[in-house]
Image (cartoon, rainbow, N blue to C red; front, side, top):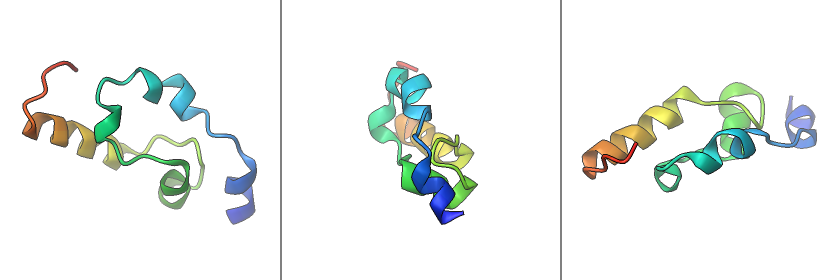
Length: 63
């Protein structure tokens, strides 16, 4: 699994993360995604939930 993760280029930031208004509150990174889901470009539901919880706690309503 390790070598598979290292050879894949992460697509997620190009497709979804770069347009997300709360990207600065997210803990997603290719290494974390690989550890959690086995792929560097995987969507990790927990990270998504944490980012949205942080935004809500900070009173951010621009989502």
